[in-house]
Image (cartoon, rainbow, N blue to C red):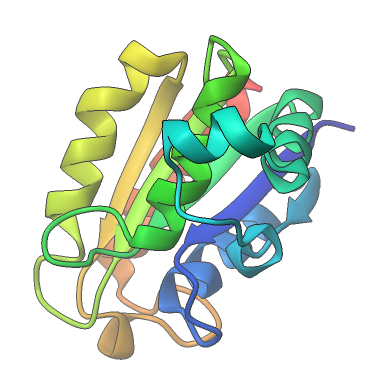
Length: 174
């Protein structure tokens, strides 16, 4: 059985992106390893901190989980049109552990938000940058209006069909 690492790129305890990522992982039908970015809290990255204290163990543990997985599902929360500070910090520390940063794993990148754009700005950033950082992005999906379109699963028929196509693409890449 394949291992799929899933997480919401948010530190909110009630993150809708965590909910979407965890649910998506369950739809893949493989072993899913859900992680919470709150379990990887570290000092804000700086080269001075790295020089003085080295790379935090949490960054090494995050990278190891990534390397041990066969695929990765991330759902991005959007803060001011970009990544959350929590995700960016974990990524910045993890990136110091060598390349490829995302270990060339098949990736299913998603986003959701309460609004009608569904976090498309931050998803676009990830879709543009991850392939240059060792991310083998094979599927993507944006869910608009989370509160209206998600209740223990995607409730809108057309959005669910679009999601299912992306899940099938991701499963084929594993």
